[in-house]
Image 1 (cartoon, rainbow over the protein chains, first blue to last red):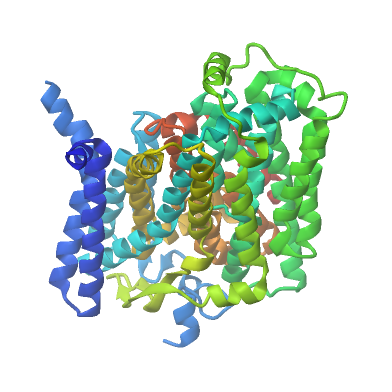
Image 2: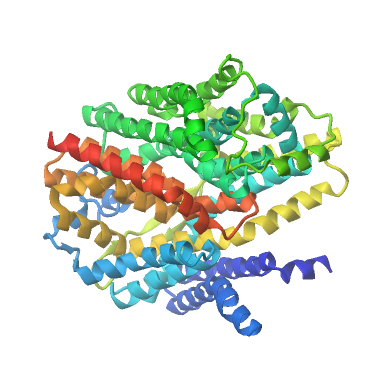
Length: 67
Length: 564
């Protein structure tokens, strides 16, 4: 119950973003070692998505929601 | 590619000109240094600054946008492919982890003290020792933070100093600003001279040579100037002219010990040249509190940085039998553990053997910018890492306070939950900033930025040498990284322009130390523990005028020294 509460807060959602970046990091490192460009691309896109979560949420989604 | 080149990417050989200068002027590898390319490389930084300063965005939101611009620029204009960008992003995440571990453990240490009400005890205890409020602010914001910078660095003084200052009644925003000034002078020779060693390595300076000692001298001389400026800045913020007048003798003495001591020791032992003066100044300020001039209660009633109502309110909540020494237990532990591990050579050698690093393959841009392969990229040595010292101090402190009953049942869980909640937002921004600097460096944007400035300005470039150091620290959050990034470039530029390289390198590292005051990834540490995350732009605004003026003066002195 308490865990659900935490992941609904900003800190909790950023924790999820951090975990996504960590998984993407593993994918990229694996891809670089095995010459797997697909893994590198997937990992890179995951990083871009996770990094953009906060600005998109604060300056786009929240503003649209308020309007 | 030979081994030497692999170890020091960008260098023809150690101590000689960086590889990019082996090519014709106006072209780095094959990257055209045109105004357009320079502007595109500058865009991520300028957008980051505008979003934070003008639009008051927090670093958690601004850093990802800076990163995205650096990525798009790399992809569209610097001929980088997705594989290179992915590799640089992964390197950025790995390098950010080193900083994040420090943030997490520093916040954990803070939460332990907070849960046990240790900060109120420290505040009340220091007040008894130092009845002069200005001296009290200087003791925590200028001297204690220097002491922490001398041993741990990596932003720990900012994370730890802010809550201590809030504890004595300083407004949270100013509680973030003051430690940034206080610890900045220790950035080059602090953390047992890690940033200085990086400068010597990247500029090819051999220990004990004339060039090494002269560069150490000019670096320390510039830093001494900044150390004095920082002390007076703290006084100015506290109470303008009235405080400058009252604090003048104290700053003269403390700056002579810190800056002068560092200058002297830089010619004897660079490793201890910050730590020893920082310790001596800690003792000196307690003695100052016993003198007639500072021994009585004194304060500036309308100080713009103080919120005494908050202090009085907090005072009424303190009901503990904890002594001042007991309140400092985690910090005493931190100092003892750090010094033992770093100074006892056999112990250090054993613990240093464990290193975690990852292999990265070589990547090349379409312009021929090569990022060398590495078998063990930026290894983390967990047992000699500042994060380990902080973690051990926090855990032992937690057990100690729990045993004494100062942390109640359920408090231990609260400490860990609060620490995680407090650090996650800053974690994302640190990752964004470090990734941005890696992408810029790996795609060739950083070197185009620096070369563009040098090519256009000629000898006048010396005026801007400290600003290059400042830019490096602003981008990476580390004086050490700035020196690694630009040390070789500054040395080669000085040689090409036929000016004194020691002065230019001194200006580079001093500029890097000054730049730590406005580095977003450092400021975030303070805003996190001060609980004002998102106000990084406001902090930079308060600091920027003094920082830019100080850097400009270092540049002017450097320029005059090179033309005389």
